[in-house]
Image 1 (tube, rainbow, N blue to C red):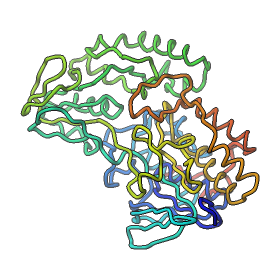
Image 2: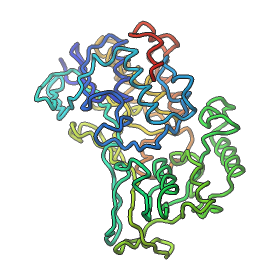
Image 3: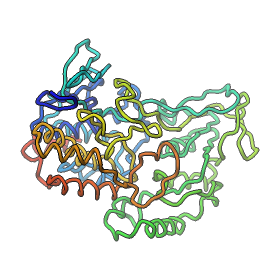
Image 4: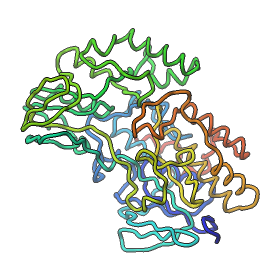
Length: 455
């Protein structure tokens, strides 16, 4: 085979979390043979708290609603709440694996330790000591596994750790707790501390917009998806005004005012924090300036003593089994076409290495289908392969949706969900590929519609 040619050999998929299961079903639909390796003993990825390194805490729920977060042709059970718990999400994913017969395609308790580009394919070494040859590699191992810790002057002599190790609010009992970071995990954990710690505080380096999970009784993302669809500049103004009408300005709660417009950072889907701030259960603090023993000095000149600091400061994106130079990186993120395709290597793909302002899991099926169809086209060769290769090599879409995202590493490859969906549709039209229609996966169902009833 020529360099980068997929040929007729097997595909190696790494990871059986949400992304890995989506790509497995798509490959089956395209009749592409593959092996999928999962280092844990079951499917579910980070949503399985027993999976070593899982960052999921007891109070974790989806921040996108069930109607915007499910696999295609496989809705979440009707009895699920608007925002399912991590236990329900895990049960749903396992029901999905059962429904489509994915378990027998997965090699559990086997991780990939090394994937090396070797001539016309990949040499893959696994944790059970085996080596295999594959025509293509799909990385689907996710991003929230390598905690990023902040660095501040001085030394904190109390307990300080990353939030990925946090599980239960009982860990806060009797302690003075500071949560650093205001992402969705940070505000969730701060709300846990408000209910169980002797004293709770949250430190934010900037102000944020806090989006309610319901608008007029409807999940916010469902409300946005149902329209009306306004120009982004007007959507930002209308939603910002609506949020301010509902909750007032953040400064009313002692928080910094946002230095950016709504949607220019990843949305914070939590208004419980505002509730606890309004009741004095959480103390708002600005960014940390330095540590001195158990005393934390803040940039507003105040200082307080704490017993425990939890850093909800995000994750470093790593693909440990792959040499870093195999992907180009931008701001600590792999710089891929459509967040899926290597522009340099026709046998290298990724799924799940993206962030967006909506339910990414519902996109996974569309994205997985694009990967599977691309592999099939490259195997076919001729004009189909040439069209795919030209698109991946030359197309440079603007996926911002007109939003000027803040200049942080996290947002270097961020996409606006409506713009991403629109461009996926354009790609399909240009290549003559159909979209996913209801019932397209019916022939693959292994155990029928009752499978998800167990969720």
